[in-house]
Length: 128
Image 1 (cartoon, helix red, strand yellow):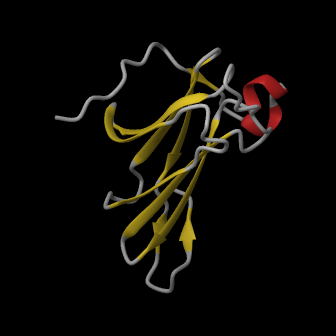
Image 2 (image 1 turned 135 degrees about the vertical axis):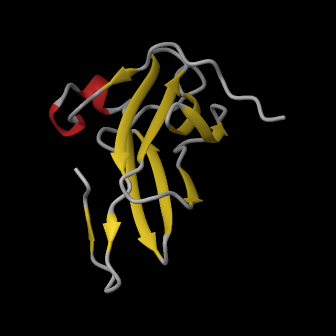
């Protein structure tokens, strides 16, 4: 049986490129590449501004959810300097991926991104 953490209301940062350094170092960045109907989803917290990741202050976990259901979870310790999670998923274009990163001092931060629509020629476009 898989156990996922209980998530209190996460902090959502709608535009992480235009916020305080505090929010920018905590919100996860989502990168999605689609190849042959498989989406490669990479979650990187501290992407916009580097997070310190020390014994006293670090990301405890990363999680990906779809429709409020966890589909992937990565647990980290202070020894993990730069937690990055990549998973391959088979989800329909337009599906919203939610990524969460949990800082041991400042709580959980949330980002959302849709799986893009890709044509046969490999050109993808956002579904927003």
